Image (cartoon, rainbow, N blue to C red):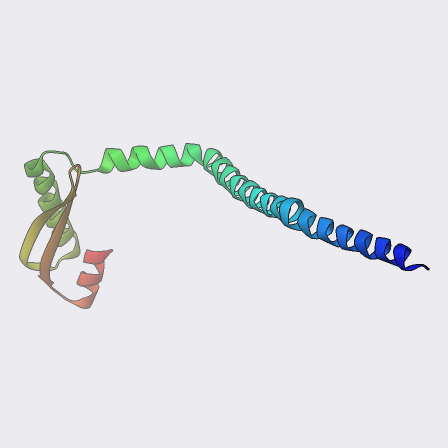
Length: 135
């Protein structure tokens, strides 16, 4: 092999290495990153679709539960709602046989359209009566 042929082979080898390196950095690595990103997006979308399918399958029972919750919710009028709670408390006390010492309803508003009624009660009685009160 002559020195000129050896020089050509070395130059050709260097050009091939530079081209392979550039191809890896400019084409192959970005494509692999893009494929991985798309694969993650596809997996996330498939999870979302599966969750949606589960919700659609449970739609009837969810709507029924929601209707029951709306029907059994306290009225918007604070006085009526508090009256219902007091009547319910009286029924629980009467049915269980406990003695009620105090009952304090307290309205709390967490958001514009969302209120809760927290109540504290002090009752006395035998263990079986208190158990009936809570059941």
